[in-house]
Image (cartoon, rainbow, N blue to C red):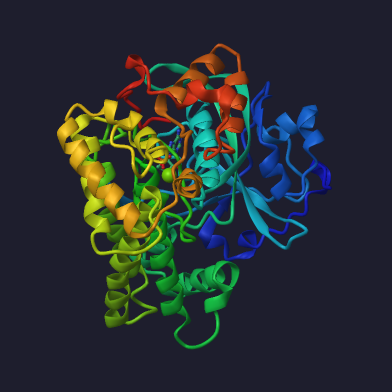
Length: 486
Ligand code: AMP
Ligand code: MG
């Protein structure tokens, strides 16, 4: 196992042309302290978890000490923010510290968020606040354990440094661990600034590192793009299935490897409200929950534009047209699994949509309602779930169709319940749960972060002692407004 001194750095991105980034040292905190540590992410790096207890740990991930082998740099990228192109982006408050190889041969980027100003900070202070670090830390781990490709996080380091947002808050840093930090926006920058040679260099690097299976042959750029389209469509379908709203689907927040990336004002659905907008700065609802699938395609279109020097137009268009089929396929299969159906039948789509409509009309909780469906027996006309619906008549009609459908495939209740519980999480990171951990942390009590981290490691398991975390949000916890400032 590695210690902080012996982490196996091998910084391939830092060996690319200098024009792609700026070398910047972290601006460390004067008094860093460990807020939370995730041993699972440490395992990805082969890092001995005992290191977390040492003062060096908080010093290294609070930007005060440089890890041996790290070569910190700020990446340059651009992107479309809320539909408008912004040429002035880049790592403004986060640094790629380097890449660590583990004994499985995996390569992990270490990125320190909140590490101070860079040439791309514009008017920002280069800092991140404790609140947003906790949200990213818990959100990214929650998504990973829901089976959705996501960045991970090793730790949060706190400080006594004041950071001004809407109010004065405490600065913190988050150590993000990810397979890649290359965004759609990296390619957009090189395209829009007229640097085709460098764009090709970056594409070759990305293909060799992240898409080696597509690296042979003359059409490697097309095959790479096809893979990005498929991964993005898969990710979007999975977001919809768990009721995740990203909040800021700008192209600079889209990872080229199809991982859920850059957690800001995201939210999980409580009640099933398709038009849910979690980011309270998103006035037009561009990134509303039910707009996400088309925004995913919109972003891929922007990426296609950036790759137009490498792939011919017709091939790009045809590839983009493949997005919908992947999305619809994964989403339909996922909904069938959520309903506990094994066979595929034409009426399944309507059955799923009508259940969702009942949830919407009744303002019912998305996660709890699907979870409860597993307990409905094929012959039970009055399941407990029925009590949640005000419109009993519509529910009864739907239930009858559902039970008939179960009968058609000779569904066995007990076995179906097991399958459904593996498709319908019991525990999600409801906004109010994250907020509770944040409120406590801001008073210096970090225990709730650890409680949630552990809870969300097993979102599909019954955890009887944690039952209250699966409850409906309290009144104060519904429709919390999440600010974009972080
Ligand atoms: P985000 O909303 O975190 O995805 O950031 C969008 C852009 O603004 C990126 O280029 C960030 O690096 C930059 N940015 C966000 N917050 C800050 C900050 N506090 N200081 C400097 N740059 C920032
Ligand atoms: Mg971002």
